[in-house]
Image 1 (cartoon, rainbow, N blue to C red):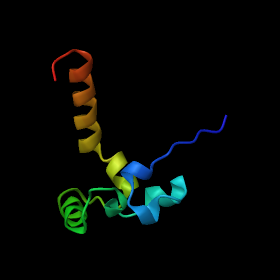
Image 2: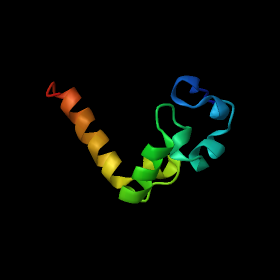
Image 3: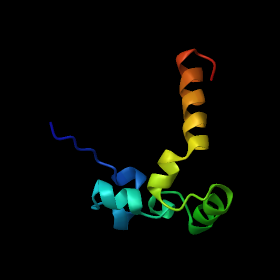
Image 4: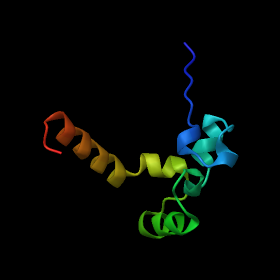
Length: 76
């Protein structure tokens, strides 16, 4: 079953029509609200260069899992 999602609100304008494959290879600054300086800091601190790198980063995954666990137990 095909799945579609409107990601316009979370992407910079120039990236809105790109494929999932292109988005995963895009620089982190393709995400709305992430500046070039933010992207440079992520690269320096965590070697995160692309949106895919950010999504697969073990530290970000652990932090997200902990935040979701806290929300599910009412301990925000």
